[in-house]
Picture 1 (cartoon, rainbow, N blue to C red):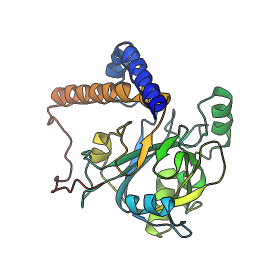
Picture 2: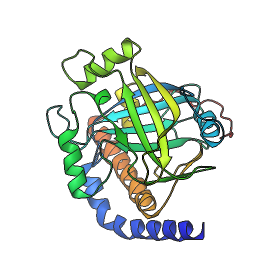
Picture 3: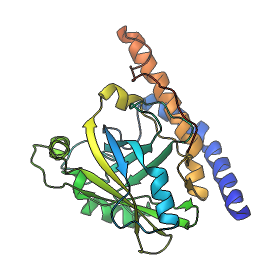
Length: 276
């Protein structure tokens, strides 16, 4: 535990050191650097078939309930480009979808590559099917700590691939309409391929672009029992916050020039239980 705390502290410090250098680029960019364009959908999480008793079942029970899922491109917005697609997940406590992050929420980020090591990333980009969000496997890249399971790797395998449509957005929409769009979240002891199912996400309707634009993932969240572990998770925390702040400033500036309001509308915030 002490080693993990030291690793996290070093990661936070490293992220804080590079953030002043990155912030001007965040501000000029005015949008996400990676996974810029996305589709935000509501989802409902249920225990998956075959979940094992003990720690896996306990984790599965903590993840049950409403969720948000953001499907996104990586470096490019066009389907035909070689790219690494992304999934941003939030397991939340609100009865209605909202961009507001609350105590007890769990955010996860996965991509269609098992590693950021350049050779593995480029190979994964070549193998990614950019035409269909549901035709790829997504990886957590860096490990998490789960009670009773220790350090684990994350993987998501979707179902519902191959729905008709002119692009990946329409294919996803048609798979959702058929009730076929589902994501299976699995965990494995870090360094192994012994994956265990812990959550099934049944994808629902797409949410508004205004809500998608204000949806911001929290790199350090672990409210449902998956705690980000190690140096690289911690490195992201401060730059993520700085990037989100820069995007908010840039968006407010655009709206002022256009005569709009300061913030995009979200659904009303409802009373929240603090239970994780």
